[in-house]
Structures are given as C-alpha cells and as structure tokens.
Amino acid sequence: MALYTYLEPRWLRLIKVHAGEYDDTVICDMITCCLDSTSRPKYLALSYTWGSELPIFEVLINGERVPVRSNLFDALRQIRAVQGQHQAISSEGYWWIDSICIDQEENAEKGPQVAMMGDIFEKSALTVVYLGEIGSDGHLAMNMLRKIAIAQSPEVRGPIRKATKHQVDALVIFFQRPWWVRAWTAQEYILPDALYLLCGDQALGRQDFQRAHSRLEYHSRRLPKYKPLHRSKGFFMVRKRKKILDIRYDILHGKGRYSDISLCDFLVYAGGSDATLEQDCVFSALGLVPNRNNLGLKPHYDDKGCVVIFEQLIRSQIISSSCLDIICFADASPRPESVRCPSWVPYWPTHKAQASDHLAWQSSPVFSSWRETAQDAIHHPYFKASAGLPPAVPGGIRPGALSCQCLMVGRIKALAGSFVAAERSEAVKLSQTTSKPENVHNASISTNEGWLQKARQYRPLENLWKTVVLDRKDSYLDRVAPRDYANDFKWLCFRVIEDPTMLNTTTVLWFRHHASVLFESHPDRVAISNRLNRTPGLNCGNTTDLENQMHNVWINMRKRLLVSDHNVLGMATEGAMVGDVIGVLAGCNFPVTMRETADGLDYQLIGECYLDGIMYGEMFDPVRGIPPMETFYLV
Image (cartoon, one colour):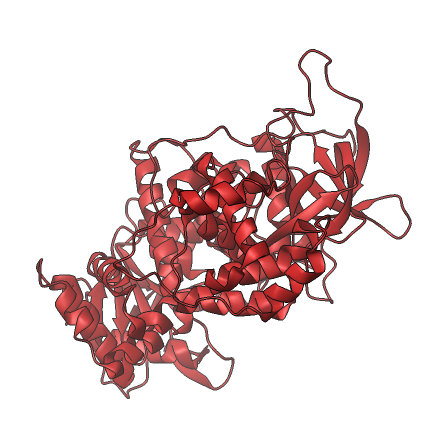
C-alpha cells in the first residue's frame, strides 16, 4: 500500500517513533486522522529547520524506506532518546512533522496542508522546537539561560554580570542558530499552548526561556561584552515574537484594546525572516491572523510567482483598512535586480523588520500597542495629510499598477548630501558605540542664557526645528516636539556657525551632512562647511533630546532635508532625488515622493516624506472643499 494516499479536507498524517538505541534505524508508524475529530489521538508537533538537502538519510515508515535530510534525522534520533525522560514528551505519543506528514511531491496536497499548519500547531498537546545538536556552546547557553530563568530577585543580575567571555560567546552562537530567523518558526513558536526548546538532550520550557530572555535583555543592555548578543538577529527576533505572543493572547481573551491583527501588521513588525520559497514569507504568517479566512489568500505553489501574492495582499489590506499607508513600507524591502516587483508593494523576503523607522508606524493602532515603551494614550494628533479622504477604488484593476487620486504639491528642488556619504556611516558607528556619561542628566541647552541671547540674532527658516525631528519628540512618534526645541535648534545652528568644536561628534556629522541645505542662503556658507569638515567633535559629549531625535530621524529613519520648488522644507527618504514629484494621495496620511517612468505615463513610488505645513490636512480646506486631484498610476 502506498505511504501517501489522498487526504480528505482537514485530515492529516501522524507518526509514532519506535523506541531504540541512538544509532539504531529509526522506525515509525504512520496513521491518518481528522484534525477536528474528538477521537483523534493527542500529538506533539516538531518545529525545526530543514537544513541542507545533502546528505540524505533513510528512516522506515510503515515498512517503507523514506529519505530525510540530516537535520530531521538528528531530530528523530534525539526525540527517540528523550521520549519518556522529559515529563512532557511521552514515549507513546504521536508526532506531526511537516516534511514527513505532508507529501512534498504533491503540490495539490501541499497548499491545503500548509493552510492547516497554524491549526496543527495550535491544537498540538506540545510543540518541541529542535535547535540542533548540543555542542559545547549549546551546553553553556542552555545552562546559563536556565540559571537566569530560575534566579530569585535580587540575584537575577548575578549570572548576567559575572558571565565569562566564553559564556557570552556561547549565547551569541546559540542565537545565531538558523531556527530563530526562519519564517515558519514564528507561528510554530507563538501558536502552541505548550512549547519546549530542545537543544541536543537539553530541554527548556517557553515560559522559562522568555523569562531568561527578558532578564538578559534588560540587565545586559549597558554591558559592553553583550553588544554582539544584542546585535544578533536571532536575539532580536525573540523579542518581537514574545510581543506578538502577548498581543495575540490579549486579543483572543478580550483583554486588549484591539480585536484583530492584520497580516500586514505582522509582516511589517516582524517580517524579514528567512524562507526557502519566497511566498512562504506570507504563507508562514497566515496562522497568526485571526481573520485569515477573510483575506481570500490561500497557500498555493503554482507558477504564478510570489509577487502576484504580495500584490494581492497589499490590495486586500488597502480595501479592508480604507487606507494607503501600507505602501509607505515598500521602500524597506530592496528588490533584487532579477525581481520585477511594483514600487508600491513591499517585497517581503528582503523586508527589514524595523517598523519604527517609518512615519507610517503611527497609522496602525495595533502598532502602537507593540511599541517598546507601552503608552496608555497617544500624545499627539495623528498625521493626516489627506484629511481622512478614502483611497480611490478603481473600477478595473491593472496588474502591477495602483490607481490613486493625487494632489500635486511640487517637486524636490534641493536635498541634503547623499546617503552613501562616509560621514553617515561614521555616525551610525558612533551611535552604536558611544553612550552618555551616567552622571550627566539630559538637560536642555536653551538654559544657557548668554549663548541664547546671541543665538536669537540668527534666525533659521521658520519651522525648520520641527522639520528636522518630524515634529516629534521621541523615536516612536508618540509626542509632539516641544516648543523648547525651537530655541535649542537655534542655539545649535549658531554654535555650528561660530564654533562647532564643543558639539557631539554625531551632531557635527549631522550638520556637515545637511549644511548645503541648511546654510544655502547664508553669506558665510563656504566657511561654515569648511569649518564643519575640519571639526571632529566630542565622542563623549552629552546630547539633548533634540539632538537624539535629529540623529534618530537621520540614522534610523534614513531621512534627510529637502526643499521643494515652492521653498517648503521637508524630510525625504534616502531614495529621493532632485526633481522627484511630491504629492498627497487620497487615503494616505503622509505626503509621498514619486518619480515619473521613462514613458511619462506612470510613477514609481519612492517613499513617504514629511513636508512642513501639510501634515495635518492643511491642503484640504473644509470651506473651499476638496481641491482638484489627478489620477496617478503607481507601478
């Protein structure tokens, strides 16, 4: 009898691993059952990475030899070894393992089975995450995580502060294991009620692991020896997944402010994970979305390609949210030269999971509840450049093109220096290596009254102080920039003109980068630029909230000063060029920059921008009505 026979809808295969010595042939029995049946046996689900295609090993299933990759072969032998030794891993239990329980040669089966995977992990009695062979680094890392998890306050800091370089290096290697950054492992970590991490024969429950991770993250962030760990993508992704787990729990139990998570919300916040098949960047997240059945998006593995799926998802998000803001994240995903993806569609395989580096971060209420510092309320009016107008809904859909109603604002006349400049790279490096002296408080520089009196004689362009910080005080765009910033920025400009030597190095680099726009009309602009080029600044100088936000907008949000052809100031993304069109799209809360295509008929989306005087709908006068808008096609 064939091992793989037709599966009815909502049916699945389960295997039981026979007992045996570690080096014995792995023998399994396979059964089929209905996932939703009350009579189906309890089962455990295995989460692991497939790894390289070679070498290939064989296991016996229902008497047939089945080829498996080395990662799964090691996992099966380890499962057999620990069954019965760990209380949660029974020797009599069934297992669901994707590469065995799904017929990988049958695409017609893969689609429906992949669509069920969220339910399969959610209904499992236990999910076991196999991280790989233990190794010396695995032993050290698992022991240290366990020690941190069980430590009682106030002894929590002890194991972290006293850790040797060898132990810290082991943690770095541990979080560099591929499982932490694979796309499919997000739902496999978040959905199960119970989960164990298995590294070799060492097991650690999810609750203990998360406690250890949170303590390690908090108590080690100021310790230099842990910097490589905090820069690890795996360590970073654990924090993201923990937050999604908490939000999802609140939603399912009616405890949160919101009743749903959109698929795009999840992908923007925690996307950018690795997947062998590009469409799996989306399919792997479907199980995390409560309303996934309303998306009209079913996993399939035909020849249409991933871009069609990504475009379908964005159109669905625009319709369901009546908002275009999701397209502002498209510039966070570089396109390979071989891929033809519309400029308004995020290319999820290369998406950079840093939601807070976009103005569009403020647009989703679920985003605000995921911020690193939870806020009970948003302390500012939302940006609403299009004054709440809904997006245009065209009668027909042209593949690859998005029809928009656009109010033209102007074109970019001038931009600050190129983002490939060496000084920005140096500023990024400095922002990662320097910190404030602990005994210096974050005081406002406007308290220096003597300098302030002289600074008042110099008058930067009106609202320039707002523009360079996007009219926000903090990196999560929660608070309006205080009026004190006007005097503080005046003082900084005056100091740059007169004597920049006592400024922080990153502040000197910021002004050096933006001098061509800032001082374009100043009679001593050449001397100012030369002085900035000769000034190194202070590596350990204290910085103010204003300077910190200026650095955040420049370094993390990758925005630089622009001047429009109507002499309006703004901040543009790194891809913008002189001559690009600035417009407000109906349904988009932020102005955008666009570039005409070679034929002059369509436009490419470059990215969101900030433009002084239009961020709150000032272009749309409630008395005069909606001004004439043009139909643009983004391609």
